Image (cartoon, rainbow, N blue to C red; front, top):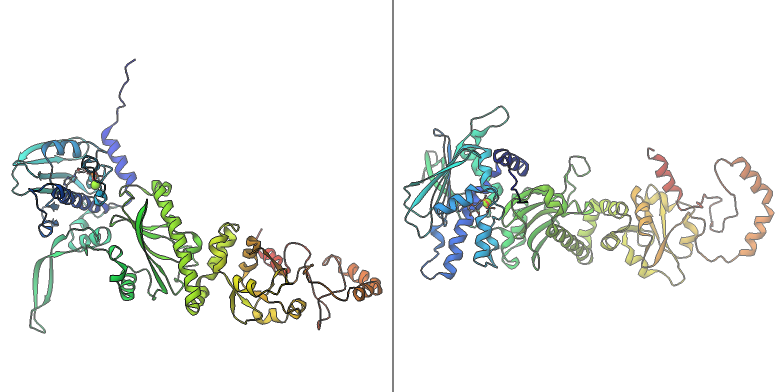
Length: 558
Ligand code: ADP
Ligand code: MG
């Protein structure tokens, strides 16, 4: 039997596609500007191999102009243009990407500057326009053509006049509706904002005729109206620059410009990776806890760029929760511009980048701890809790990443110490890492349970945060040393006067039995304590949990 072709209702398909791929209408401009930039890139690549062509960077640009009366928005480029056939093929077929074909035809290994590859971006213009007109003259051709369409119903192509090579895309902007103010796309201020937001790092100038009012030159109080052509985008992103060209101030300015926070970051991390997956990233460790950090409103994530074009403002998949305080951006040539959120989560490259970033952050924090303890402690004051929650929530699986970043207050040092410092100071006969849990350091210091351990000369870590003991339970051990609560039954400390204890135990048997009876609801046993020196009595836990941990658990709603 002959195979039949699927038939698709193209108008519905187009609607569906546009609305499911793009969550915001304003990105149509990003798509059209990206196409224009691709078109200029193509001349650039052709000039590399064709001696008859020269590429003078200054004569290539993209221009955005709005005409409120005519309700048109025009995007002009001096790129490679399209022939009649190309107009038909590339704009007449959904999901046909001329740019992808260009890359493979020209065997462009380094062609990753070209953004397009899905062949759907262009149609996003129909989200804001009733009619889209494309006037184009291809490089090396004498004829220009006009392509026009009102959506998926079809399109017309006819010859027209155009002097220079390149493309002009004219959008007849839709009338305002109740939900959508389409007219905003004709406002200079609004357009500038969108260009800055998504296309700031396009490598060619994006120009606009800008009007305004300013002081007259040489005058202090006389103003004049002006209209001039301005370049809106800053073109070279800071993350593409060499690290040694940049000062600490440059990074700080970037942090402020991007409004990552109002504080001064403690540290910046500039990552350039040129391996199987290429990406650049600039990450910041902030000094202060963002005001909404522990609220539901807080969203973690990094800005995600595909080759200089913003595709997501907060990509949560790039950061584990325990590093959710990290701010910054990632730019990768290997991510595709059009992919939607859902697909992005599955993206292998993205996973790779996320893993890579995690390691970089860890290393950077470790180096901060090593080389600038004061700063690290300030950081730990703000975000240490998050790290401990990270250990707990991942059931210890992120042990390798997190265990060396943890700090606890030490009975001996009277300050925060790391587990490594603790273990490296342990006397040979000490079996466990001891900790005591309580409300405050002062309270813990007075706990009778700490006496025996402290008397032995062993160091005790003070756990004053709810999460401390839970986290440590997930770690199980550090460098093969298990954690032990000072209030647990067996402290693993060798007793000297065992005979004496036995005798005391016998002597007081009746008293202990009576006490057990009276307290039967509250305790499981009453014994002679081997650990007390100055205190008459103490509570000790038998099972897995310390008394304090049980308290926390009892407070939790079931
Ligand atoms: P993509 O950019 O993913 O390839 P688009 O739907 O955005 O898909 O564009 C489809 C194709 O139309 C492009 O691949 C390109 O060949 C062509 N095209 C679109 N805009 C322009 C332009 N301004 N100049 C030249 N060619 C263009
Ligand atoms: Mg495109």
